[in-house]
Image (cartoon, rainbow, N blue to C red; front, side, top):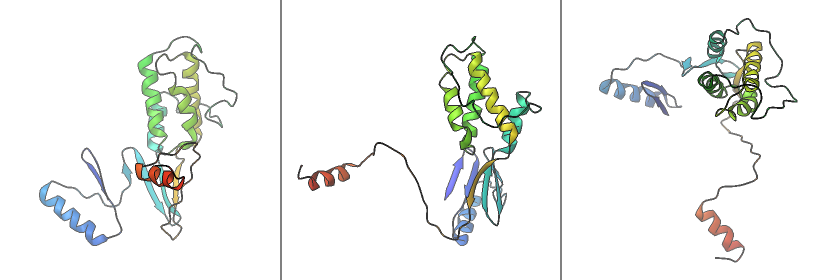
Length: 189
């Protein structure tokens, strides 16, 4: 697998010889620098241990807290008040560009921090007209992040390549062939 973002490339796979061959072909055509095992990519830190692989954005969180002047803030145990009562007119208007930037950075952080996804989805509803009440929730998310900046996702090494997925959905997207098969089972065309 080859993942490319502008001028950064990740090469991974289970065939070491094929990876070496690909690296050789790329270096013949382009100036390439092999940085070895993946440790950091697009703000995501990758660490390995015998239990598995951990993806986190610790430096990203600390930079965000520093940028907002919240490195020394008091922490909270949840990203959002359980009984939040946000509405469109929650307080007075705030700087729209600053709000967009903060919420955008929190959205990117959701890649490795699904624990803040709901709170970030709530504050992103008010991007068109951010108010002080909405910004207060953004700051609460930051205070929550301060409590565990290195928290992330762990992909456990379990000795097999079986992928498990779960879904809670009320609808299904089907291909034309699948719909036709169901229709023929029901005796319809």
